[in-house]
Image 1 (cartoon, rainbow, N blue to C red):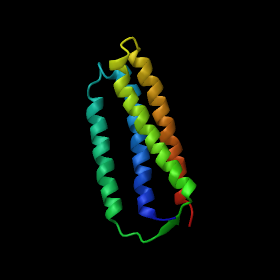
Image 2 (image 1 turned 180 degrees about the vertical axis):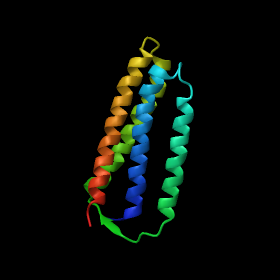
Image 3 (image 1 turned 180 degrees about the horizontal axis):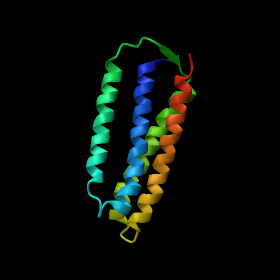
Image 4 (image 1 turned 90 degrees about the vertical axis):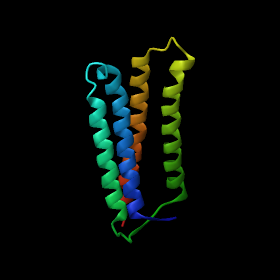
Amino acid sequence: MNVYRKSLVIQLLLFIVFFIMGANLIVGAYLGATMGWINYVLLGVLIAFAVFGFVLYKKEDPRIVVMTPKEMNLIKYLLYGYFFVYIVHMILPSIVTTVDQKMLSLVVGVILMGIATYGVTMQLRLLKQK
């Protein structure tokens, strides 16, 4: 399957943002109450990535990268898995009130960062192809 290279670059930025969001879960759970400014820093980083991604997407780049259906499905499953874990993190504390919120944030943050790291490495491997 042929995919524009700039689409893969945008997906790479998306997985980097996902890594930052996973790290934010961990940092927010342990430092969020004492350091409220961290949320503003995260918002600034996300806005910077959005502007950077928009500029990259609007830049003309006619290069094509060939992806196998297996790689396309793997990216799809990584995204589904990321959002499933993130939604479970949001819903689980309201269903099970005895769950330790900090431990849940730590475990979910590590899982999300792992998924994002795998996505970043996969995108970089695809982008290295000529």
